[in-house]
Amino acid sequence: MVLYSLARKPLITAREVAQEVGITERAVRKIIADLDGARYINKTKEGRRVRYAINSEITLHKLPQSDVPIVDFLAALGWKKQ
Image (cartoon, rainbow, N blue to C red; front, side, top):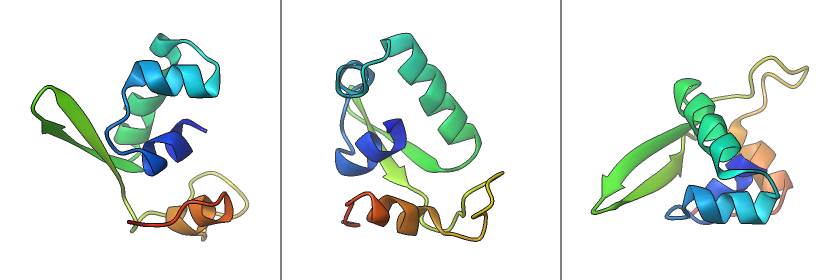
């Protein structure tokens, strides 16, 4: 759900994601770091904020559906690429 939140609102803060998802801000920051490390997302600094972008080239890792592009997975959840 963290990935979906970042996809829907590219300028969302970790605190806002934590409130949406129902986990701690620290847990959200760890997940964001993991997503960044696995190249699911790209982060760019905009002033004092961070803009998150989904890496549309990447497929799901370590799942039976590992050939499914991440954008298709997010689309199944209702996300529309901007």
